[in-house]
Image (cartoon, rainbow, N blue to C red; front, side, top):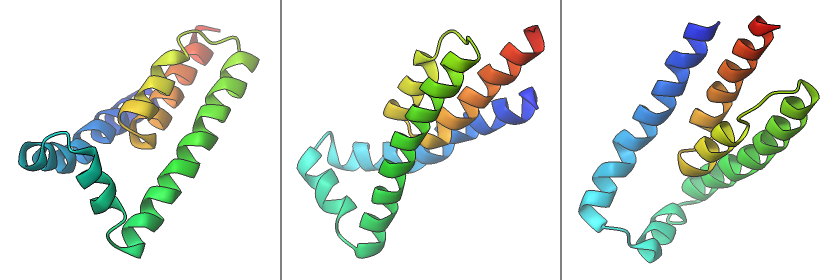
Length: 104
């Protein structure tokens, strides 16, 4: 499972940023344009609301499950969730949890 989670973590960075970086190149760090593009369609807003709720739930899960199992470095998947998204945060946490369980 470690390899599976590691591959998903890599894909969780590469795939979202393959869409985001060209936008940054085209628009720069224009937060107003970003917000406008996100809310441009109901489907776009739907997707972002889904991601927001998922990220909040994931951070709660990381903190609860990580502390319950005595895991260290919980800041890594939380930072990954905040910087990239759930697509990195979840597989990274699952990878860290798998490694922790194998040590025990």
